[in-house]
Image (tube, rainbow, N blue to C red; front, top):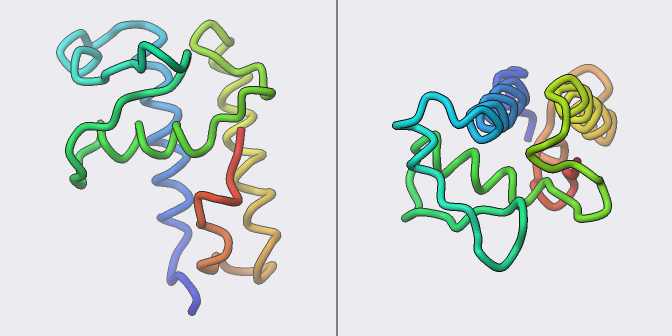
Length: 113
């Protein structure tokens, strides 16, 4: 089954990047306060109840994408994180059809920063 557009990849890109910027800058404060950092695993989040909300979706993607060996944390420069997210998505796009996104491109098990 082929995913009809690249919107899913763009959603992942923008969700991860915006969440990173919110956590890094603590701004906007009301949105920052909705994210729950894990007390046991640095740079990971405790997920709220499963929903389609931005906080749940972006926290869940971040937890699945982050590798401890990546060296990425919330002190990393935004430009580095932006480049890593873009590279991650482009690498995953190459796993399936070269011209279109497929389900294999979007599985969280194959995505890492």
